[in-house]
Length: 248
Ligand SMILES: Nc1nc2c(c(=O)[nH]1)N[C@H]1C(S)=C(S)[C@@H](COP(=O)(O)O)O[C@H]1N2
Ligand SMILES: [Mo]
Image 1: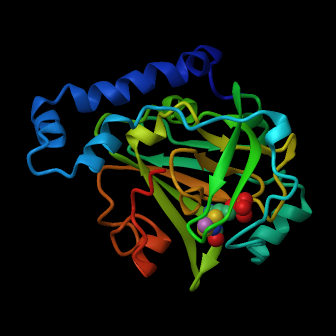
Image 2: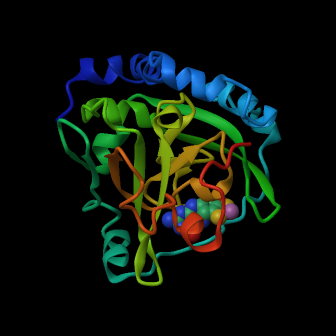
């Protein structure tokens, strides 16, 4: 284990505060964000509620069937080799604006304190399903990597290809340190299956399904989305005009 225990335990909550402080501490930013004059009431409410929890459900409420959507198997030689090896060679790379770039094995991720949550997944295509998810908080991993204060977004790179390039998504630091934002290793009590994003997929419960990147292989902290894809922060945002902030 390359991560000191103390760092892991100190993780999530501390940085959650740091994330909020960062916005609130800049009076100028608060003024612009919350002035209300030029802003739609709904948007203002959405911004103020960013820290609220998504509803959680009981085991009895879980959907008997949880469909898989988008990529159901990345199908590349590299991914097939990882599957064949039961992901023993999988590494999650954490880089960008961090003091300590990390390369984490599945065992290392599984040894971190985990959060369990039963939540509803809402796809923009009009279906929903309730499932149970388990894995370390993204904030714990970012804290272990020493994410710098200059970082404003976290970008996810995935193992599946669209038009020959990896699927990608991004969230801001508010969602990155939200307590329900986890790197799920398990779904409904068992290790993630290939259709649902094995071995690691993002759960970012306050947003729509397409933000929940499956098959995550890379996490990069950045200060701008300008250099990512076509600049709108995600595959669907860049190619079919989905909103970057898909709050629910
Ligand atoms: N890497 C990757 N992540 C992805 C997608 C994808 O095609 N590739 N599809 C997204 C969409 S639109 C949805 S609704 C969810 C579906 O998750 P599920 O297959 O576990 O139901 O994954 C999201 N994450
Ligand atoms: Mo979706």
